[in-house]
Length: 103
Image (spheres, rainbow, N blue to C red):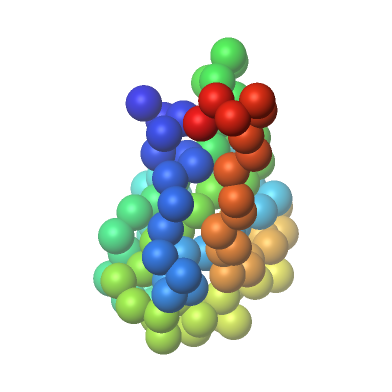
């Protein structure tokens, strides 16, 4: 289930943020708290390894509107959470790789 969610395509309205360099122990609630100060959050998703379930060290935070996402990016990029300096960028929708036209 989380595989589908992790790679689900999202609108190019740039309201989803990539949050890198998060601590492996970080939870969705710990990420939601600082980001929610900037507006309504639709989703917080920490990307995890399929085999171990351990965090891969990055997450996505989706806002209800573009302006809130941009403000959060400006204010939170370079701040510290759980002892790690966050790298916050607007998320970029990547094309899926296909192998032998299987998808």
